[in-house]
Image (cartoon, rainbow, N blue to C red; front, top):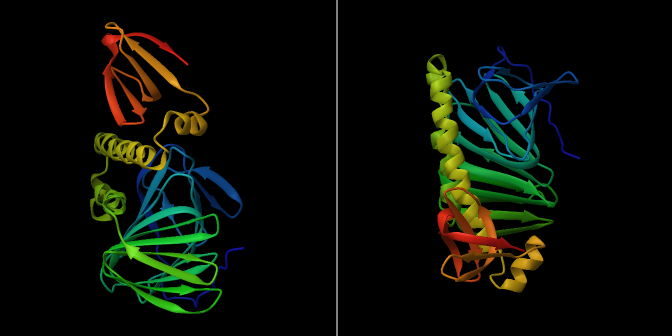
Length: 278
């Protein structure tokens, strides 16, 4: 279970606002679940859930932004003029926090507490592991099992599992992943948001996510025909009009087919394809 900490009452409650949304994310308040929409208010107690094709970004006055990535669930445990507490049950958040504007900013996962100052980072929780990658600023990370803290500095990432911390350098993939937050509309542009702006943002963000997914497929797959068949439970065979045969996994279809092969990703023009078999 995720621990939700109660905070002292503040002189003024704050609202966050949805500055970007795509797919069909939902918000639950007082046990009532609704689809999220642009410019919806988000406050203490709100629970945001995303499916595999949805993303939501919340802007908070003076604070900055945080994005809820696909297949995630997060509760706004406290949002006031002095505190922001997020409880990440599963999935991934990317945060861009302005410098020293809030007194108490924390992200909770079932096994960690991330204490935040001005910084840009991502945090994910899956399979009993918390992973934090940091590109700007510093973070204090607490292991809830041992109560031990570490200081994470920019350019580093840490995995928290059981009673251990494992630190290493962030990769280019981590940096690209976190940079997604830079594409999100800021709350300062709240009144300027319209369908045209959102459509352009959605197109650009989907392009970024598509590139990241393809890179992940190439890296994570055991690049042998046997490994490809085992992972995808199939093997695609493309024959062109010159009789050349390509074996692998079709990742995307369109004017060109992207095929993942033991030698990497290749592009085959649709007009050159004579036959596809499995």
